[in-house]
Image (cartoon, protein in one colour):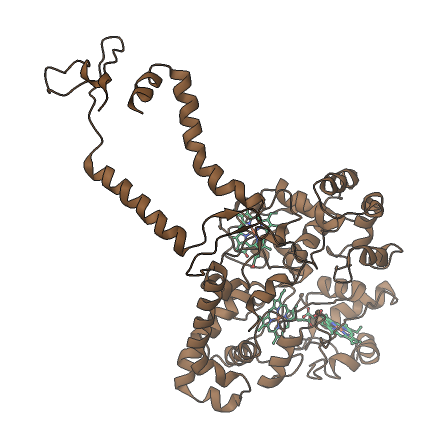
Length: 290
Length: 240
């Protein structure tokens, strides 16, 4: 130690040297840093030298030293992702080009695929269709067994893949045209008629029924039960998209509807889409856990 | 050394300066080189700047504090890639001033939400999230249906242009009209927006009311643009 230490006073109580400062009567012990801390520091410095050699470390102008291990967090994450992916491949591969009937009947596969499908549905579909596929205002019920576009699993998968009025080049197109050219009265009686369809209180002999047959039956079917796989819903069953009270139907008639279901081709893999198709089908059969 | 310390301790201002000097070494060593290393921010070639309407939406996103609950950065972790898609690259937000990466996730990450939902869903969700997600704790933003003020847009674009965002002279002068045209697909200026900003730009009536260009149009246009300004990140997942 240097000469300055020597003339510093010693604290009479502890016998330690003090720093020599006196702040208004308060003096401070000159306790040295504890050994363990000093050693920790030395080890840390030694480790840093090793780290500089192994890991990306020193800047060199426009570049940096990459380190002998060549680590890259991005590449590591992608590796990890591929591992997750490969771990699922055992059962997921069966969904690449699936035989839906066989898969649905295979409890071993469904035990693994079922929870994964529920997860996927919650992350991607539930915001619109509800956790249980129960739909919501503007979004169709998936769990009632009625299909606007067809209900065999391959067709459902196709709907999910291309979407409806979506961004995929092959997207399904659906349009409820505007009937703003009808007179206000025509729309009003038609709306009442349509509102009465689910409860079968609509009068089939009324002028409204004639209006329906002339203007609506081509898309919604002669009995308004849909089923033409053209995107038009059944107006005779209990489930609705936008609402089937007279007022909402009136709005639908006046303004038209142009519901959008996003295309999932870019976001989900074909296997995931097939898995979801089976999940949706099972929801409608009451066989999947929501 | 010890004598220096002994003397320094008695001159408090000098001690303060010395402490700041020592404490900043770590920062200088770790941060300063990032400005010269080429790889820090690799601006993707196909990166397009936000359109004026999307930019207006971004301003509203900041104004409403959406960033307090939503991050816009998918971290380089396997599970994040699995849920949200390819991890975020610094270059993807090269034109964001300031960037909105965030770290607080009360709601989900939004970096790749563009195209995930329909405009109709976003409008219903922003007016009242409980409309569509019954258990949501996100606040309602019904006032976004008011008309959009496009007055500041030319100046905002000009500011960003000075910071290096590639807005051309034409883009600056047409900022306000481009903002209106993007949400009016049948208007004269609609195709010009795509000519200027790229064919991938969505030109639609976002809020379901063609007559009015609302703040909702802007926010939804912005949300639908997230993650679609470049395809660079997708390449990280391509098999080599």
